[in-house]
Amino acid sequence: MDRTANAHWSGDLKSGNGSIKTGSGAFEGAYSFTTRFEGTKGTNPEELLGAAHASCFSMALSLLLTKAGFTPRQIETEARVHIDPIDGEFAITRIELVTEADVPGLDAKAFSLHAHSAKSGCPVSKALAGTDIVLTASLR
Image (cartoon, rainbow, N blue to C red):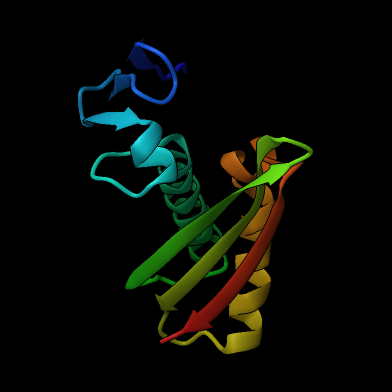
């Protein structure tokens, strides 16, 4: 199973711009230096990486909870992707996953164990193994 995404870029780094789209056609958006580093409207690689990580983690957590005999009503996950300058170059230095779930019959300790297993087991976490990934997990 392969998934694709395409990016187009025109111009130099600071004044250029680009567009990105997923192979499925589910998402298409604009990106630029200013959307990445100055907060103007549009997307950026870190935001897209965060969306991929949050969704992958949520699905992995749902799988683990279901295998353990619990049916989650809802899982909400936010990924905060940090990009910082290191030795004159930018690097993704940390990803904070913050998840909250409604899982009937599950206590906080068991939920935390499943959440940490999902963090280390989801395919996006595995792909980002060189990045510090921190998890905060709570039940509603």
